[in-house]
Length: 92
Image (cartoon, rainbow, N blue to C red; front, side):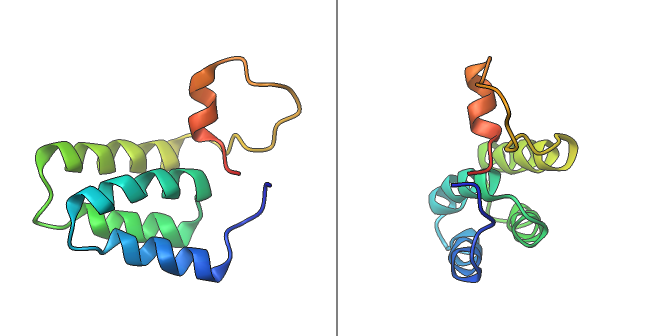
């Protein structure tokens, strides 16, 4: 389904981005990449500024933020995927 996330989903993802566990926060980046949206991007940027991130975690956040800010939305498809990497940038 290609719908914007509900308010409940956005609230859950934002809560996960502020979790005490870095593992949970880094894993939640995948949800933000799929769902997109300005509110989730802002929450991800706030999570990326935390002092308790490891260098690897920080790279995940920085790379993901850059992709969200620079890549156009690829979810409005009129043909099948040519590259499997495209699947990871899709908003479902």
